[in-house]
Length: 204
Image (cartoon, rainbow, N blue to C red; front, side, top):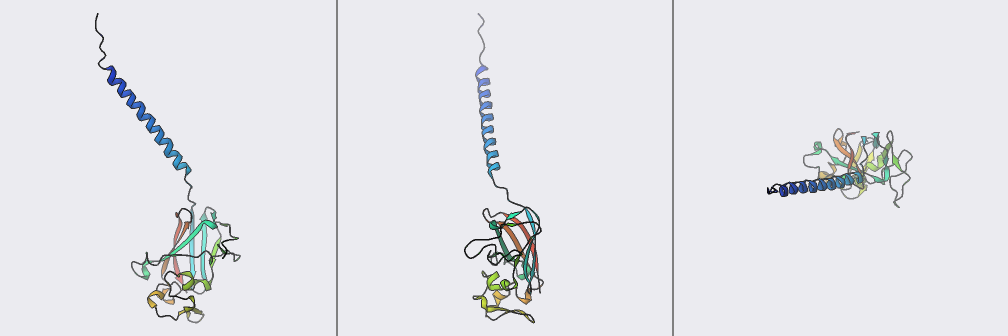
């Protein structure tokens, strides 16, 4: 009898098994990745415009995009380089939701943590009153002590009666800051993801 030649059978079976295992692993990884991506919460998208007037206060305008949950918004400001180089890490200030209101005067957060503001829709505006752009209230991270150090008079604008003029020079309310800019960022509070960012020019 002629002997059969099975020398190539084992390598072929081995290669086929490797291919099957590779395909199974690829399918499992693909399914896991797809599930992970699908489970992630999509960050809302919007565009904003900021208006800052030393005599009138501040406005944050939703100029387009998604309707946003007001309770989940965080606003941050930081001095731009025209205030001085290297200030981005030292002048970051999270704005207090208690001083940001809607058109009816309702704050994003009351003292007890409640709020009547549910959403921030395209076309709507949020406000910070002229009295609350006091550097000790708006920018306490860089302000000099007591908010009573700062006062406003129509003739001469905002005045400072403390002694730390290096800090006063970083305040948006300082009359010398007119024409300078700061960055305003709106973020998702729960994830920290940036929703929108804009540059704001300080006006008298």
